[in-house]
Image 1: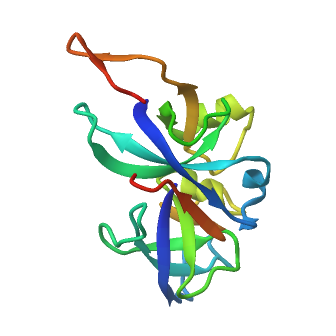
Image 2 (image 1 turned 30 degrees about the vertical axis):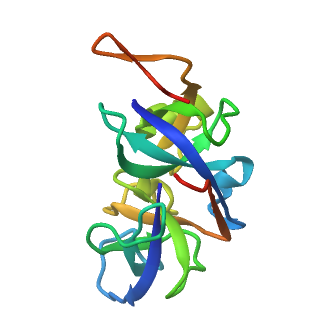
Image 3 (image 1 turned 120 degrees about the vertical axis):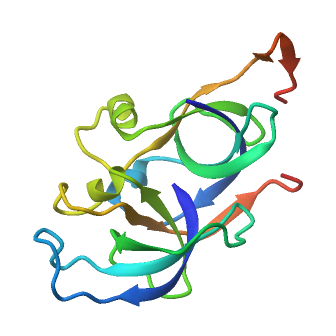
Amino acid sequence: MQLARVIGSVVATEKVEGLAGVRFLMIQPLDKNQEPVGRTVVAADAVHMAGPGELVYFVSSREAAEALPVRFVPVDHAITGIVDEVHLVAGS
Amino acid sequence: MKVGKVVGTVVSTVNIPLLDEHRLLLCDIQDVDGDVAGHTICIDVVDAGVGDAVLILDEGSSARQILGLDAGAIRAVIVGVIDELVVDGELRDVG
């Protein structure tokens, strides 16, 4: 899993079967110092509570779909938690 | 599997239910030269601590097998604490 910042939301009414009720958010992946790294991606919100501006973590690839109610859906990024705190060792 | 180092912890109260039972550790992933090549947030099953050099499994099916799960959004798991690392006949400092 990696850290990311939620930067927006995506609304799509017409979706593949199995994705009904799934929220999609735009996220910017971050490095461990919470600096942006790589391109923004659209992630399914598996915790149903993430919102713009929040620090989250997400899982990629096949395991993203595992976080959703229907397991065999075409989703490759899913938010699996909202971060309360990151404790990073100084100097690392 | 990948070689990494535990550099911190991540605390969250809102998460998928599966993660309620697990500690999340923030790890550097290291390349062959020992340089940082990214990070990942891992589940820990070996009681690793901050500063430890660790072996990181980053594959979903194996991760679920270790945790005894049929399903679950899990990929990165710390599966070992590294005592000694030798690359090209040279002992690497893993402290």
